[in-house]
Image (cartoon, rainbow, N blue to C red; front, side, top):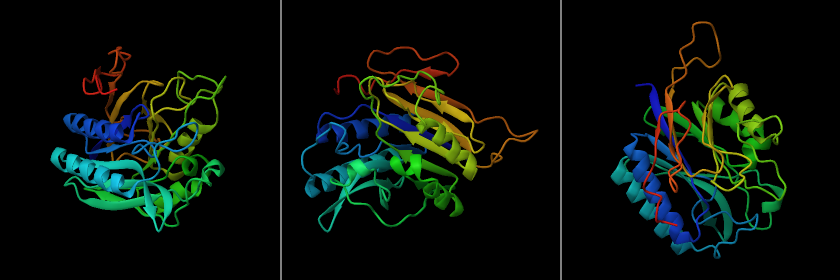
Length: 292
């Protein structure tokens, strides 16, 4: 089977590390209900990104072991693969990382952030290696925030090593007076979402970028096709899952007679159950209510 269902967890920044675990587990359950094969979370969702005005408690190896174990158990019970934005401590150094969990709840490995934003250098330590992962027929890589925006070679590495898709967990929140987009890759917005389109097109692979949900968010979660065309995106600032089917046999670039784009739909805007545009069949999620 060449069709894979993706879920991107476009969730608010957790108020506490323990809440990050609860929200991740709830999102895993909901993603499994949509029959998704894999769900990806934003950068450092557990325990929460450090910086840009956010200050979770100090790094705690015991908390991370407990969080990873609990979330891996949830993944195994739901039978869904997980890409968890998190952090890890190696010989006293703190790394931004993505923890990859298989459908049976076992750990496939981690991908550390190799190219740090300069603002992160006093908090985090860069990683040094890159790898690809497999979930059934799907081969994928992970690039984290700054890497995907400004270092095209990070995505190229994964594509050259067989990746059908590159996942891009990130954290991007509004700054005072910043532009508030309502459509993806708006010409009046910053370069970031245009870069996402380029990462897919220049490597002829799918590219899935996933952000937190926040008021005035300058970027959102989205899935880009191998020709650089937009498959689907989550409404800006609205919490929920973005769910889409991708066809691994899809032609890598547009050509006459190419297959129609994969079917896709969104779930979400759960707190007030605002309706999504009718152009995308959708349903409201109930799991997020009452957790904040």
